[in-house]
Amino acid sequence: KAKIAILISGRGSNMAALIYAAKAESCPYEVVLVASNAASARGLELAEAEDIATFSHPHKGLSREDHDEIMHQAVINSGAEYIVLAGYMRILSDAFVSKWQDRMLNIHPSLLPKYKGLDTYARAIEAGDKVAGCSVHLVTPELDDGPVLAQTEVAILPGDNADRLASRVLIAEHQLYPNTLAKYVTREADPDWILEQVRRRALALTETH
Ligand code: GAR
Image (cartoon, rainbow, N blue to C red; front, top):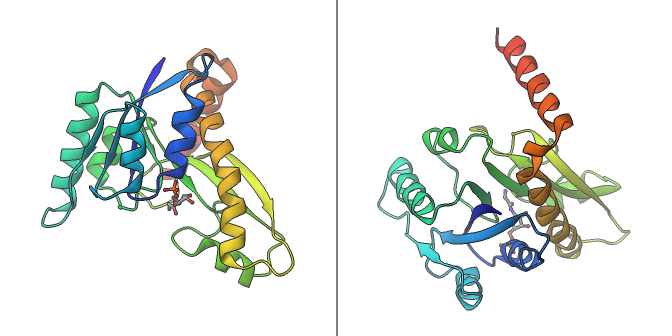
């Protein structure tokens, strides 16, 4: 099974969904570490109760690069091959991102490229959108900007407010993330996926030259 480390900053409900999905025999990944920038992150307690190794180190007083390096070492020591960001509310240094290129996923509560950053639900409602949703994407140095691997649309209901919409988007997140991660870690076996990557890289090269 592919070894994954999950990085969290708070509640950790996506982390829980990833951990529970990994209990299925057929799941192609296992969670070897949950790491946080906050010792108080509620998700750490749940991970410990599920017998998963945990690590935390505060970012206060450290440069972004130094804190990222501490997290990187913890992930390396765990033997993880992939990093899965699940409500990790830190912007990552370019050095860290490039070390995990194509091996780090994030979930974001909007239909990217719409509504990068914060307050995605209120912004979707204010814009009069009919659908909101969530996206799983690869992490690149630009915030919430990497290639989208999968999305789920969630209808916006009349009278929705940000909280109501957020709680429905979260249900979609809990299904989308484990599913997409499972597909992603088994991609080596998928010739279509490999072709797609080759195309994507060729396109990126022509765009920058
Ligand atoms: C989730 O809704 C996730 O999409 C969002 O934070 C929440 C974390 O909840 N992430 C971002 O906004 C990243 N830009 P959780 O800790 O319960 O998984």
